[in-house]
Image 1 (cartoon, protein in one colour):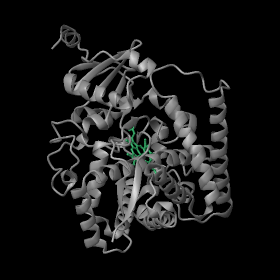
Image 2 (image 1 turned 60 degrees about the vertical axis):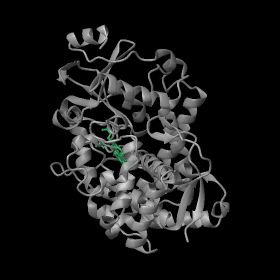
Image 3 (image 1 turned 90 degrees about the horizontal axis):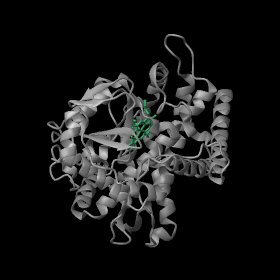
Amino acid sequence: MTIKTEKARSKGLAPGPKLPIAKMLFGNGGPEEQLDFLLSAARDYGPVVGFRWLNRRSLLLDHPNHIEYVLRINNRNYLKSKNYDPVRLVVGEGLIVSEGEFWRRQRRLAQPAFHRKRIASLASLMVDETEAMLERWASSARGRGEPFDLHREIGILTLKIVAKALFGADVGEDAVGRISEAQTFLNGYVDSRMGALPKLPHQVPTPHNVRYRLALKDLEGIVYSLIDRRRRDGGGEDLLSMLLEARDQETGEGIGDVQLRNEVMTLLIAGNETTAVALSWTWYLLSGHPAINQKLHEELDAVLGGRAPTFEDLPRLSYTTAVLKEAMRLYPPAWIFSRRPVEDDEIGGYRVSAGTTVLISPYVTHRNPVYWEDPQTFNPERFEEGRSADRPEFAYLPFGGGPRKCIGDRFALVEGVLVLATVAQRYNLRLAQERKVAPEPLVTLRPKEGIPIILEERS
Ligand code: HEM
């Protein structure tokens, strides 16, 4: 224990390491270094770690009880932090960033669109789109063993699935292509505005900011025209029609056009890249663990015997589900998120002043050896029935927790398992080069430089 640590503790301040400021300013630390830095900080100083940066204080919480306290027990004192501001540049006051009574109303209105029955009705769309992707693979050089970037391919698939789940048959290939292009740019734009360094206001017409405005205009043009068409023609069984029909129980009011645009943009942005990241890491891990891959194939052969999976098969695909959950433990797509206390508080005996940034990192907590034996090892059996019983609920939080838990968690799990089962029945995915793929900790934890893969048809 250093003198500084003792001093911080005696003042009620959480102790923590010095931030590697030169690396943060000049970016000469690799992305993995940032993750390792947080991991070691949590192990050396945890469970509450204090950081200081340009007079701003942040705290990293690593104890499941503290995380539960912020996300569930005292959640009304903890708003989304300023780190979410760049997201507003795309989704306005969409569900993921709105607060207070307004958020509560929007969440109530959107919730029925994510009801179990609704998700069940989307299962065949998820499988059909995956089979169409496999057909494209089979009829191209990929089917003959040419390497390609799996992350990019899965990103296109998950975008198609969420776009069709939202808009149904109204969204054609051309619109999906434009949505994909605009959204890829906007994701990168949001990433570029995160981080500790001050940024030029987005209104300043730099080439990057001008491109942002054009991409946003294009995406919202598509979204507004799909909303208009649906208001005019009615019908549809998709998420958009659910949002259009939603009425506030007390006032009978629906969602206006601007807010509908915000919610649709939120679902497009939140519901696509995250799932693609989860699936990409799943295959990366499977490709390095042949025995686990084999066990996955055995379950698929036993339960499905070569036919396409359905929603009803999901309870019997327990190992497949465990593989996905374990991949999200090691590489949680939403690897960090944050809150800002409105009033002073205390956590674990340490002072938490109003305005402090409170960081919660599933990446760090999912690798805490107190809750996870041999935490760096990929072992899906941890998630088999009955094995999670003594783990605190908030030791595993790929979808967050409390009232602001991901609204799309069931959608994502169903989609993830169905896509994994459909692809793995037909192909074995092998890494094209035997090298480690590094995670890039941006808004999501994507594989830096993608995942080069070669297909091997299963006999
Ligand atoms: C593997 C895939 C996914 C992961 C890992 C994930 C993760 C998360 C996390 C951690 C949060 C909470 C953030 C916080 O507390 O600050 C969140 C919120 C949210 N997610 Fe997801 N998500 C996934 C898929 C989806 C899908 C498929 C959709 C929609 C189609 C979606 C829509 C949302 C929305 C709207 C919120 C905000 C909810 C609210 O604040 O009320 N997500 N997600």
